[in-house]
Amino acid sequence: MYEMTSLSKTARPAEVAVYYGEALARYGFGDQHPFGTDRLAAFWNGLESEGLIDDVIVTEPVTALRDDLEAFHTRSYVEYVIAMSKAGVGFLDSGDTPAFPGVYEAGCCVVGSVLDAVTRIMDDTYSRAFVPVAGLHHARRDRAGGFCVFNDCGVAIEHLRHNHDVQRIAYIDIDAHHGDGVFYEFEDDVDVFIGDIHEDGRFLYPGTGSADETGRGTAAGSKINIPLPPGAGDSEFLSEWGKIEERLEAVKPEFILLQCGADGLVGDPLTHLRFSDAGHSMVTRALRGVADRHCGGRILALGGGGYNHHNIARAWCAVVRELVRQR
Image (tube, rainbow, N blue to C red; front, side):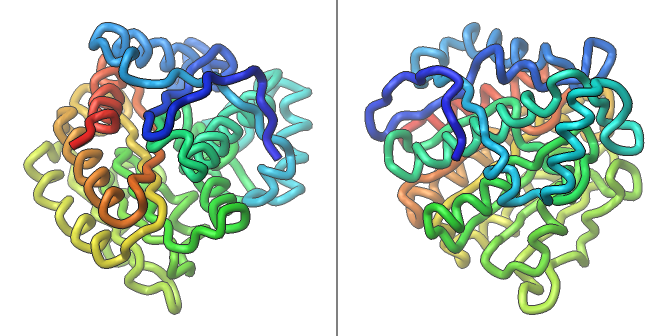
């Protein structure tokens, strides 16, 4: 099981946790890379300036053990990341995700923090939680992709299944990029509902997530992909969201994972969408309602992408604001 890197604060029941610490900030690929180590500080500064810190339980990062990773990832892939982490050079994929000294340990911190949040939500220590450097939804079971080394979303789903006997899991993804590493690894799993709104893959990495991809085999119809054209804004986003919320009410999930990437906001250097943070507020508020009705309020939000620091602060603070809101 994962192990604590240091002791976290003890929270009262029905509290909202935000994971923050230097170890979590180490997941990043240098100042010249879009996914830099300064993204966490951008969020934290926003949290302070908006006065939200007093409303959350600040919880220190946690490190996953290898067995945790291998609940989702193949052993050979984990061994590959360990070797590349020791070498500290080259790429873990075709050129998006650099290796650096300690990349394995940094990835373990992301996964461990997410698993700690899952466990604390399930045992009612926290009601909801947010892990800002997380939501690495492009990594597959056997490979890295799109700045993502280990897929904490996939590990969390497997952990909920095998350690907490949770069957019906809802994974909601509003990152501008399609969450291919979650979608295809659970494409044939009828009990994992996926609702993914993203920029059309014909114009953006990873090139997947068309509307006709709805699940495979007995899981057909258990997934919703909503590709939006470049330049789409709040009106398009908000008008499409109802399809996901309606399905969620029928699914009655036992746990909700929200990947709330900030890269759909206008001004992101890597995407072409033009959202404001209104979508992040609305989705989190809607999911809070679904969670309160069906799964004891259990929501874990994961930061995902976002490469404009101002947008990171706005979008993620909007999510935290709704998580701490009681009604």
